[in-house]
Image (cartoon, rainbow, N blue to C red; front, side):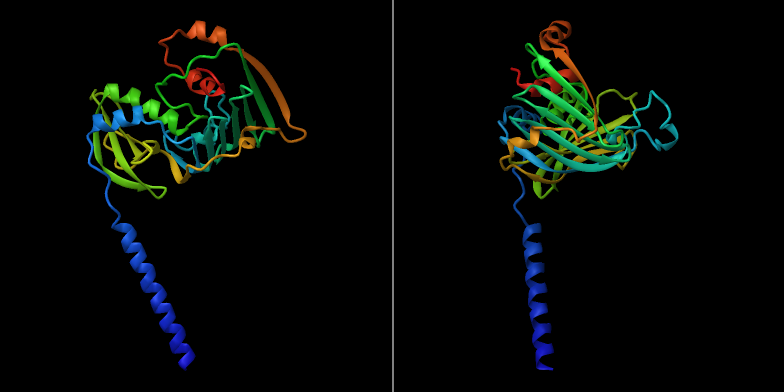
Length: 284
């Protein structure tokens, strides 16, 4: 009997300590109050960490049920991002690696800055595409929307800077994402004839990196599109992660992109997806 009483007492103490720890975590100090212009300026000026990695998840309700549309060539049903899914991402000066698992299939995207190559591997199709950039590629520029294959914190930050020019911007409070305290940056379109209700980003209060992006339809209370970290780390990343070798038997196609030609055709002021992707291949 005494042993049972002792065990019960230990369990009660452990539970009490756990509850106190959880309560203490909930009472963490809030971030300093900032205005929207101050937050956008801080995001633009922040050097940011040298590396970012973590687990990510997304939910995409923009396309509805793609099962019936999978045979339609003009619908990107084979992209994991067109439905819902999860994965992992690594970003550093050496390159980017994204591993995604979604309803549209599993993919691996690897961009190597030093080698100036990009790989896209489709596990379902057992195919791999390799792109090599020669010459001088376009400078990294903002895009009117994040590239579907390269939803990195940097790309989202550039996207938010562009959206802020066409929307009313406010800091709508604070939240916690992936264990990090973050500001809720909300952007509402200035035009009143758009189906877009608002775009909301959770911005890490310390690093100023966007950790989560939510897109709301006009009048909607739940996001039709959400992409963000479920866990995040700013520790150094193994450079070998941005070296890709397709599995034996994979059908591989290759092509070369002339960076000098792309730069001439795009012009200095064009806002294009290529700038985000090719900019990761070691260009200034």
